[in-house]
Image 1 (cartoon, helix red, strand yellow):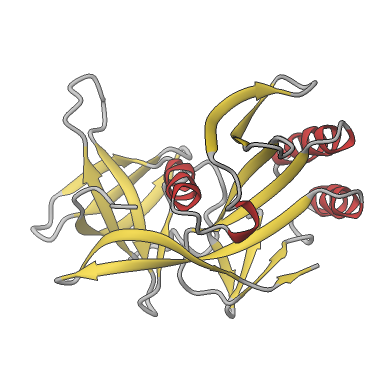
Image 2: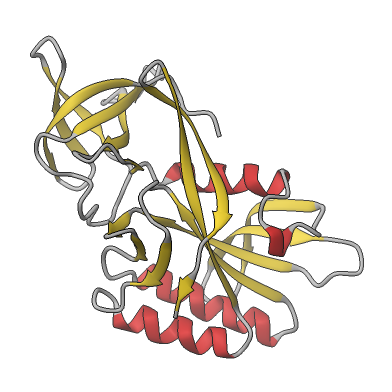
Length: 238
């Protein structure tokens, strides 16, 4: 997935969930939009390097968007969670997700379920059961261990319930954890943050819901991040 044209700055603070103040190299301070509703643990420390994009949409109050954080150890994290579905869509098109490579049709954002939900991707293939794929972003990383979620997610809990219902109806149901951070080699659910999500997903997996975690890799050109791709599935610690 190609990233938009990016510029770097220094993070001053994130506030009101969707806003952040950054300091440009010339000392100017501007406010940018933050498209991430999570806690962003470890990705929003004062002084971190921020990579941001600019929109030409004249109706936007804040034309700049926070895309990536570069951590002190040099690792990168894409905090714009809108990018996760773009990333997975490209991986599905390129048959990179081994467990889903047999499907030929990809339908994004399809309404489904009993709780007024939209599935990120509905996959279809000849002589195959429809496959419902829910995408979640991995941005929380500690000691090479990627985790989800970084805050209690009632929405995520609902999605697990919906997927389990679809599985019981004879369809495939998948949670795909997409690496938006390039610093992990293993993955697990952060049960200490959201024990109910952990309980629900374990129960769903026992009943046939599938779960996979994929690592992310950034391409750097002349010191600037230009692309992000999913690379390989990583061990899932249950």
